[in-house]
Each structure stands twice: as structure tokens, then as C-alpha cells.
Image (tube, rainbow, N blue to C red; front, top):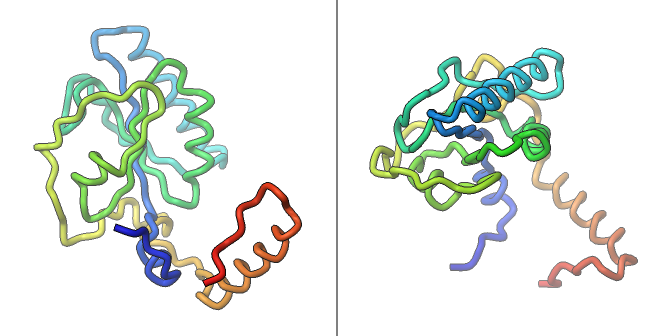
Length: 181
């Protein structure tokens, strides 16, 4: 299988919302406390405008769904993904973080489209649906992620930007050149 290179197809399939699951061993008081402190820090930073990230109100002190240990979820729109990812990379301490996209294919999102900060945990994928008819948008009232109303670049604008980048990179010895097809 070759990865797609059609700009329209790639743009239309872009992931717009993500989950970060912060894991802690539920019988480890230090890990549990560290996870709660990280959650409070994310909430403060959201309040102060660093990024948009929405921790679910519930902190699971027991395994739930596919998650084998204590955890909580942080929803993040693509508009804030880099900021939240960067923050968690730098500040997760010894906690593991499961990162996965939100698409109609929840099982694939957790099984083959996921990434981890810290050591991975085995997931119970049997609890997840293979495919849903609905886009799994959350917090539509924020008008971010799949609910965004912001104007998007047209395909022509994207092509002009790409051509400009290629022109600039011609003088960079270390930059790979795009195929000329």
C-alpha cells in the first residue's frame, strides 16, 4: 500500500481532534498524585490561554474501557495539539501518556494510530467498536477541531505555499528535494 499523495484526499482526511490519556498505577499514591497535579496544571494553563485542552471531569481510579490502569482523558483539538503535546513531553514526569486520534475507527485509533510518551501499556481493544457512522467530535460549542468554522486554505493556496517552500529549500543542502513527477 502506497501512502496517498493527492492533496485533496490528504487534506480532507486530516485528523481534527485527539485524546491524551494520562496513566497512573491506581495503587501508587505518588503516581496518582502526580497525575492529579498534571491535570490541575493543564486546567490552569487552559484557563490562562496557553492552549485548549479539556480534561474529562472524571478521573478513573480503576481500569475502564481499553485502559488497564488508572487514567483520565484530555481532549485536544488539532489547533492546540502541538502546544499540548509539547507541554506533556516536557512535564509528564514518570507518567505514561497514550495519544490517539479521534476518527470513525476507534479500534484502529487505539491499536495502530496511537503513540506513547513513556512506556506503553497493553490495551483491551475488545471493548472498542471497529467503526462508527458518526465523526467523534467533542465540545462542538468551542468551534474547534471537527466543529471549526475557521476558513481553511484552498487547494490552490496550498499549492502556492508548497511551491514557495520548494523554491526556498533549493538552496538548503540537507533538505530532501520533492519528486519532480
